[in-house]
Length: 99
Image (cartoon, rainbow, N blue to C red; front, side, top):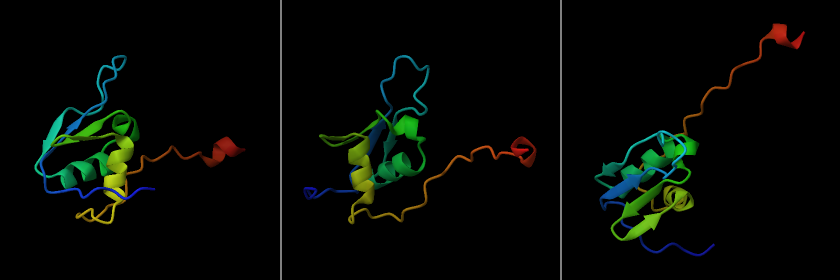
């Protein structure tokens, strides 16, 4: 894995939804953030995985896809506290179904 170039997490950033034509909506609309750190945290911690897939983050002239956004989030330089990702609860099987 190559080292990342220095990245300024305090720069304003824009998060764009995936360009999916078959779906009526991408799960979120375009959002502008005061800092790239806020945008990265929102993308990783708040967006459903299918909405993050195909979305991209624009910071000045640099563009980051899903894996780039994840790399920024996981980098040691990420300045915000990380929260556990929200997990959607799977329906539990009842005891009656097992019998």
